[in-house]
Length: 528
Image (cartoon, rainbow, N blue to C red):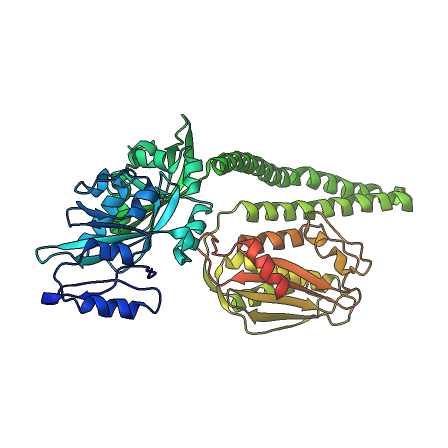
């Protein structure tokens, strides 16, 4: 028998034609034989002989004209049911709607896979117009087991069924006409169960967002994403993230493809994180307020201690021995260091607490102002400072000035050279600026490059020119940089100086919002 995959084009008297595609080289001989008859009536047996697979012939009203033996055996239909409607055949109601839509739209050239619930199999479906008489056209529907036909559609169907998201195809009225395996698991039902439901029954909160609203939004505005409660079909409710995509398909007509993902667990975790974040914010605020109040309120007792200690030395110093005078000096120096620490703590708290508005400014001008301020603080210094041309950025000019001042002050303080040298370098990247502050100081072991940014963390360096830091300066620097959406790190070696790098994003909002988070900049930083 001649092997077929669809119906072949035959030229009939009066110019009416129908299609048959032959699978092997006998097709030309069969076509020539049929064309030679020039008959206006083609006997149905010819189709049965040519078609391998199930064959149904219907008119435009979906009334059955013919069913071949293969179709009876494949689907288990009883004989002599011609003349009825295609929709009346067991398991063919949905198919009838799909095929009718395809015929009405004239989309007869594309093979489509349809799933037959009763048999649990998919069938490759092709439709071609044929002519059995001169009065009206008929349509041959050829069904072949899709499992026997190598097809990209089968691979696509497998990918859809195994997708992480539930996928459903829904008509405007809310009728579900297709669903993948994940949707069946999510909503606790078979595909037939889902088809028996209406999407309006599944969407729980139809006041906030009804199906009609979803349909109109997706149709008029494109893809839309919502978080909605859905009935799981088993008496429960889940929270799902829905993407609704409107499609005007040539085969199925206007419909919507719904992608649904169960985010119930994620929502619980997000709520828990929100609680933790709120609690952490409350505790941080309390800690910042404590640090701010303590740093100010402790100043007066310290002034009292320092004043009376110095007064004691002035009035009774000649009566004390050298040891007693040394004790008085230790008290005064300790108070001085404590006051310095409280000032730094207040500055850190203020920077951390301030809701600063960011604006554009010249980083070069900010550096010049920082150098002038540093000269006033250290009038005896003789450091040599050079810089690459610095860019204009968005941020807080005052805080960036503090950043430069702390880094340069450390470069001078921890330096045993007669002429400390500091160089500010600039490296432009696609998303950010990388600024480097290099010195020729004493340096440190690179294994401590993370520790030095911790609050109150200090390294024991004898070459600190007799001055020990408070362990807050670099923590403040890190706070400023991260507030600007960047990252800061150090590279150093003992006796070879240090370089402190920090990044500033090119795109930054009024409150420091950036498109790339700190983690992303950390990854970029490691490649820099």
